[in-house]
Image 1: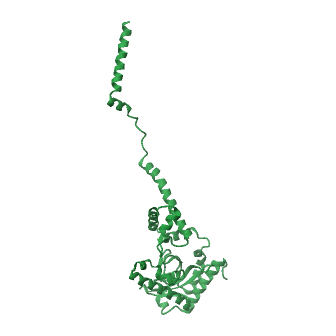
Image 2: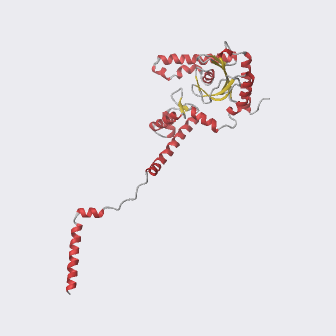
Image 3: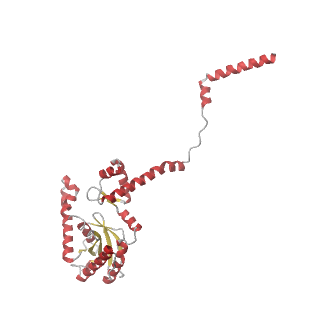
Length: 309
């Protein structure tokens, strides 16, 4: 009996202690502290998880921009890209700046973006089977052996052209031009032909955007460029090629002739690079004749897939 009363009193005390503990906020808070969460992933894992989706997304946007430029057939403005891709101009501009820095796009002559020199290099590496570069190589080698001069093939690009193939002369002091070199208009005969044969020369003045803002220097530059393009076409018509005799102080000169595709569009430019003394005051007729035969042979194979005898 005494033992039962003792147990009852002990149970009542325990209940009172439990009630005091329930009314104590500090104890309640301490008791409600959740168990420690699982350890977060390491910094490497966390960066991988957070970066991977945005990186993939950035690549996808970049590819879509390049596809839009390819499908446009010319320079595309930021506004038009944003509309085509249903993106904000700010987002498109950010990606374009990255692509510009990588050489995958370039600023065109008319306030738009075109493919960059690096993309041309990658394209050449990826598509070698029967491209004009591979097709032209044996023809350039024959021309090199005939004239004993370095021969290059350039593809039109922006305000100039890019060298894609160089067949060096076998002479002891030969001239070499590295593939990927950009030949700038109007300094190079290859670049002049590339611009003149792709453009409406009469509109070259209007293509200089700064003229719209009354920039007298830009007007003068546009006039000089238009004049250079017209002079290039005149030399092509009168001599069968455009040529240059050491205007850059290198002691070298060049003779260039165009290659056209089946639609009459400029496909490339073949040029000879040599000491200026060989060209002054103008290239020998037999040199121009051999150059034009080379471009005609390339055109025949490039257009119709038949190699000349």
